[in-house]
Length: 90
Image 1: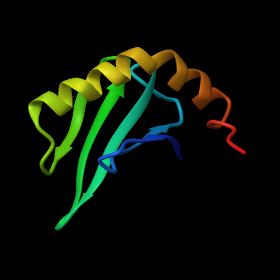
Image 2: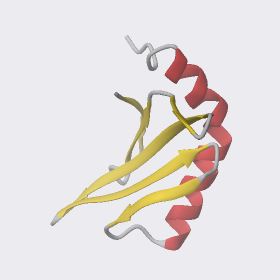
Image 3: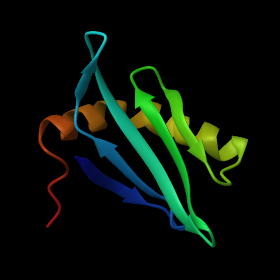
């Protein structure tokens, strides 16, 4: 299950996964995606390692670094909201 988090002005949408266990560690995937003329630009970062597991399309190195910073700065919120079943937005 993926939960919406935020959408940026360039149409990049950020979603995050449920918590899953990998090597006895609680992990979450944070996915960044925006439409382009051929489909989508996509980047996925795994928490807590902040490893990029998917990078497809035309995101720049600077954008990837920004996404890593977003993941680091919001990691506690991603874990909190994943435990609660996503953000409760009315």
